[in-house]
Image (cartoon, rainbow, N blue to C red):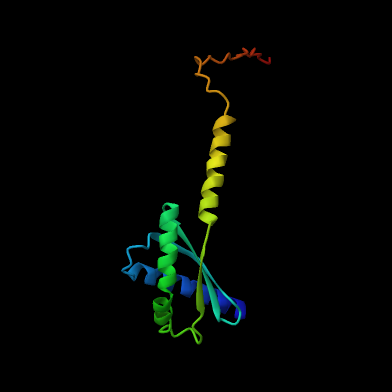
Length: 140
C-alpha cells in the first residue's frame, strides 16, 4: 500500500510542478518538460527530472531559473492537501529523451545502410496453367 501511495504522490508532484513551471513569468525558462519525480521514502526529498528542448545555453539558463523558482514551487505545493510534509526539491536534468533520439538516429542509419538495393519491377509473367482434359467415360 505504501508503494502505491508513493507512486501517486510522485505523479501528483509531477503534474503540479509542471503546471507551476508553466505559470512562471521567467523568460529564461525554455521549453521544459518534467519527465518524472522521485520522492524518498520519508517524503523529505524529491528529485524532479526534467528535459529541455534547445541548445546547451538554453539548458543552462533553464536550470538556473528552475533553481531560483524552488522557493515559489515549494510554497505552492504547500497548499496540496495530500502532502503532510513539503519535500526539498532537487532538479536533475534527464538525458533519457536525448539518448532515445540518438539511438533512434543510429538505428535509422543502420537500416538505410543495410537496405537491399531497389530493383525496378519487371513485367509480370503470365502463369502457365496446366489444364488437363478429363476423359469422360460413360459406364454402360
